[in-house]
Length: 100
View 1 (tube, rainbow, N blue to C red):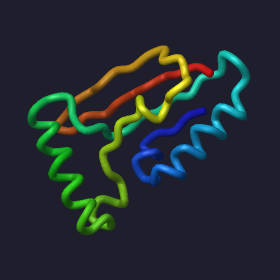
View 2: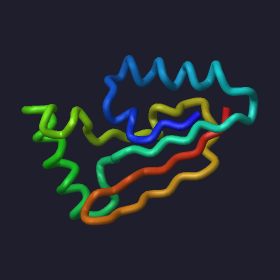
View 3: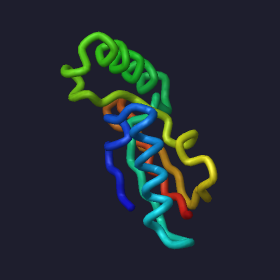
View 4: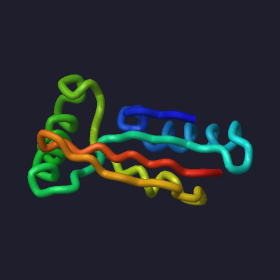
């Protein structure tokens, strides 16, 4: 199950529904792969994420509706197989692979 910059667009209820549906669809050992925009891994990235969040809270259309989110709390009950943060141009991407 692959979700690339999708959970960043959804509210908490929709995100919970997507994660629950992934759990339902996957067999034991099946993989959920998520890429998201987290709150930042470096000081410049955290500053950029705070600015992004401020713009999103006032005019979500300017950010395409996307806002920084933390993926790990959404994956309670999943086995985290891999997690990495990649920062480029003061924006961090979080890549998480979790098994059911």
